[in-house]
Length: 157
Length: 277
Image 1 (cartoon, rainbow over the protein chains, first blue to last red):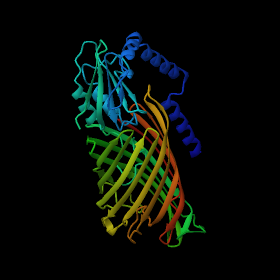
Image 2: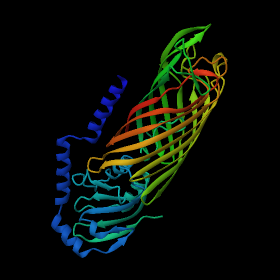
Image 3: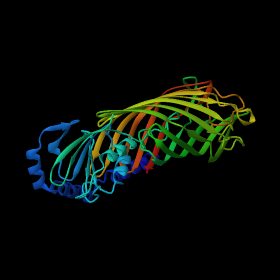
Image 4: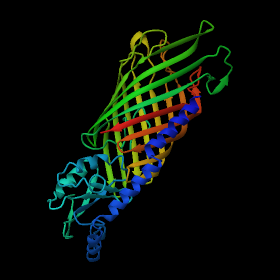
């Protein structure tokens, strides 16, 4: 009887945590499409002219206008990195309407992308500090303004 | 990641929350017990139906000052039942209630190297005598106990491993009870089997091996503590979604050596759910 109860609890948890319902899959797909659509033309033009490898392993071709991509060492688990998201989202210049409430994390290559509000000035050192207090090591960042101009910044060792 | 195993020497959570000002809570249900009677390592007849079953619900919490300093607490609510030989007959005894509070101070040194994060942990702990030490089957021996843990864990996007060595120095408590010191070692290996970055959800599948050596309690000890050496192993499933996590594990006793005649610890099952902020 206890085994049955355990089985039910585990199956329910898998359903709830991994959201294995049809609706959730739709949500994921919609989000993905929304991200892909974002300023696609600008992105194309931008990536054609900025393909050089700038700093710290961040490739300029990955970045879109009004974004910051940071290379952050140690970010391998999104559950552990929630603190970084939380701290990054506190900045007023972060556009919470884009990406995943303004932040996107790639655990496979240790990249954190931050969406920036149009016309806002980015406090890159503030972003680095937020990453550090979130428990990780910021290495470098690429910052793309709304015109597609890119600059790179290294975090202080 | 969250330490899905709340080892005796481990903080409530291992990798998370690692951010400054982060905190979290976890409810963990643990169950073990058996009606198998052992004499040393040998199973013997049990005509009096001697047995011991323990259920614990732990309320656990953690606060992170910064990634190198945390404070944790663990408070168990215990329900225990046993049949014990008294004057040649089997006597049933049971008890339930809040037991001893454990306060830990995990100190960690993190290394973030490219696609890997790892940490060394040193955890001094204090077990306070908050449980009742009265009755035939008390929940606590009423002692102040000191624990020390040393751990190492490493994690990549695909793999996770944790090694934890701990020691509990158990002082003499009330009614002359002394449960005996304990040393233990845990190994936890796993893979990050699934991850959905859009929804921030995923699953870890792991295997755990735990070994314990407990000195024989003195003759005055009436708690559920029993001396002996135990090795348990089994699978662990951990799920997470945003700030919440769920874990379940089942461990079989693969080696047991009791001090004299005593009931086996049996297999161990655990289920927990936690949240971080």
